[in-house]
Image (cartoon, rainbow, N blue to C red; front, side, top):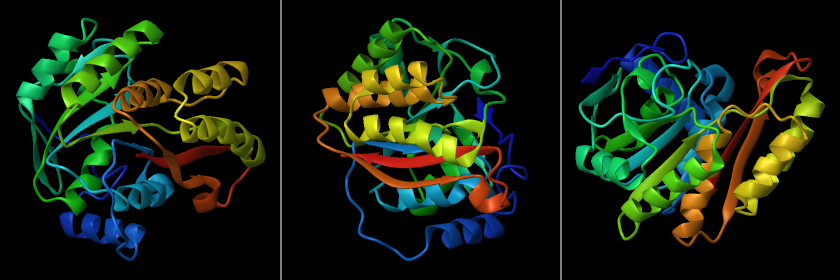
Length: 265
């Protein structure tokens, strides 16, 4: 199956030259890149969260293969939905699915299902691809949409990802925004709890903070899974790269969405 972009022209520019230019402006001057096990990036429109995403991607070496975990905003499809074959298209070109890796993940995670419905209108993974394409002309990937709130299922997926990735040069990416539609100071305080747990590589602490403080982080499942998988792979550091909120663009801090970017080393 060839998946065409669904938010080009809305979340990011549909014109390839304009899109490349915008990402270049968001990225800024080149910096020294490092190998990473995982990466956490936001998924709002580029005018709002693009600066955070661009800075995170600029910090890491992009390998030939990546796995992208995104939350399910639409309610469509399977709870753990793996897009297992074909390609995705953005204005910057076509990205092939790594079919053997996708099939291996499905084989190792009994709760995952080969499914395209969950991906059909979902933006959280799509918006990551142009940043990857900006830094690496050719790569393949496995997109996984998560609508499963069961921690045991997410840990099973993390086990599968770690088993599939171990000994290979594969980057795992989790797509999430943080607190939604709260006053900026309150959002910043809540998001600091999440970012602290990420720095400590503690997914269960992150989950506790989210539940105890009613934090409206849409992609906690991808991040929870990512942190568990990276811990199994020997992660040593969670490094927060950038935090912003939508008010930094709009000027309205009365009701913001928080955006955090991190690298897991």
